[in-house]
Amino acid sequence: MELTKDDIQNLISIGQTDSIDAKDLFLYFRQRDFINCLHWQSWREYSTDLNDAEIIDLFKGLVKTESDLKWIGGSVAGAIWIYRIIQERGLDSDRVIADFGFRNCDNPYIPFGSSYYGKRTSKDYFAFKEEKSKIRASKAVRYDKVLKRVEGRKLKRINAIAELRHLSNGHRRQIRSELIKSYSLATAQEKLEIIAADLKFPPEYYPPEWIDIAKEEIEKLPVELIKKLYDKLSSKTKGHWKRFAHKLEQLDDGL
Image 1 (cartoon, rainbow, N blue to C red):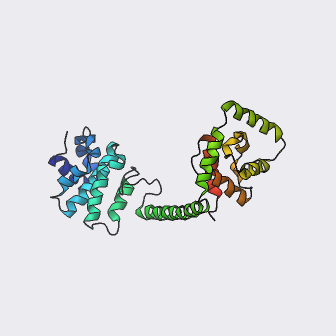
Image 2 (image 1 turned 120 degrees about the horizontal axis):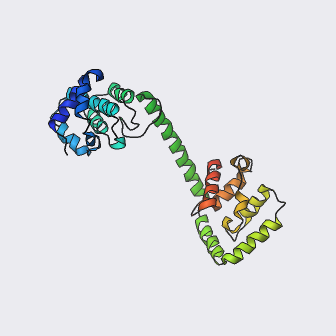
Image 3 (image 1 turned 30 degrees about the vertical axis):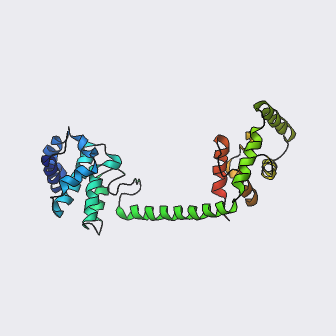
């Protein structure tokens, strides 16, 4: 099945018509939901000969049809590709057309092609994007600082993991059992300080029970201890330890 000139014309007509008066046109598309998942090139081919007004009406028609017929389109919905053509032609500098898409369709990818679940206006969308961009930039700066801080420690971790692999599973279980018994009265912080101070073995050498700590408790730890632990777990972690490393990362100030 392919997109036809009749499809394009009917969608344009829907865009020009009040939704209540477009019932017959919606019926035409009831069995043609494949249209909303077509490749972007198909929309470009059929849009080449359309004037600016027709392109805008085509966008509105796709938005209204997807909403009325509950079409599935997601990030490849036809209205997204048509809106990109609208942007290329410079037809929506005030974002009025984009706001039409926000108001009249629940698809979180319309009109800009990236998911957004906030208030359905272009103003709120771009405010959200700007804030997200600031957060990404902040994380990138912090991560760069952490990388510089742990420079050379990647090799240390490789060596520590190698030391751990020299131990058999049975021997490791025995060691962990002895550690649990020996430090049964130690506080969570004291146990973590032992892990952080170990110059031979990686954190995985120690009982995983030692890091079964709520985030609220981790937040109370000294910042320097958090950094030392995160540095030791900053690469090639798995499972329980990876989740612990993620908690530490959120509290690492990157300094």
